[in-house]
Amino acid sequence: DIKGKMDIQLKQMASASDIEKQRKAFSAMSIEFYNALKAFDLMGKTVYYQFCPMAFDDKGAFWLSTTKEIRNPYYGDDMLTCGEIKETLNY
Picture 1 (cartoon, helix red, strand yellow):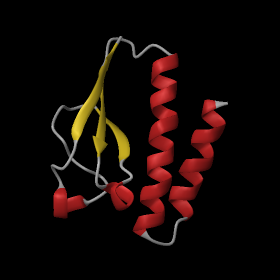
Picture 2: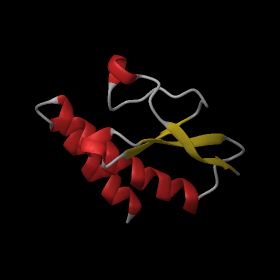
Picture 3: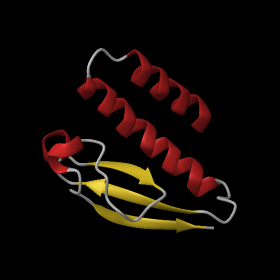
Picture 4: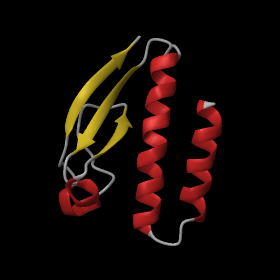
């Protein structure tokens, strides 16, 4: 079920005609990927669940990163370090 949802989001990202549509699909895919990581073992890896409160008109959006350093995918160079770690996944 999670894989199917992620496949849909990945296809939407690949076919999106502009960056904002890609970012919305990326946001939805990030939530599904987070759910997958919570359900399955990370094999000793650490992943950071990061959040930007300003994305999508202050609705906020999450993404996953293998580094603590914030590299916001929703604003690019404009606000590259905007965000915070909401959860550290380490299994």
